Image 1 (cartoon, one colour):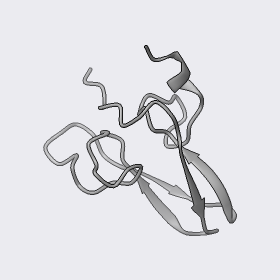
Image 2 (cartoon, rainbow, N blue to C red):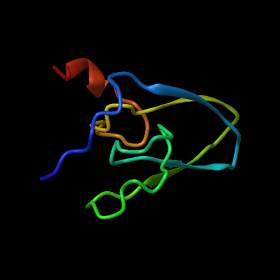
Image 3 (cartoon, helix red, strand yellow):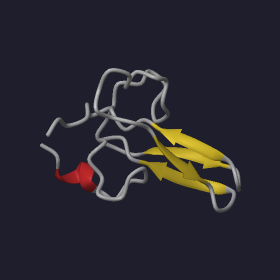
Image 4 (tube, helix red, strand yellow):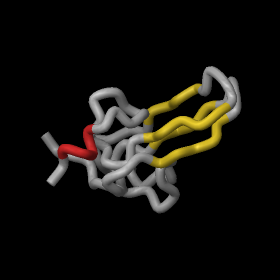
Length: 80
């Protein structure tokens, strides 16, 4: 199985708006992290949508290895 590129070993805090969709980069190649810019084209990866339930800060996974994508679950702390 091909693994995503690690964009960074920490989450991306993002202020979100209730009801708005945010397309998270799953491949790690986007220049617009943590969001998709189409760089996954030609790979086995596809972006994941996150619809904000309320206004506030959410933490999008930066290492692309989270078990609960697109949000950070602390997996980055276990990456060498």
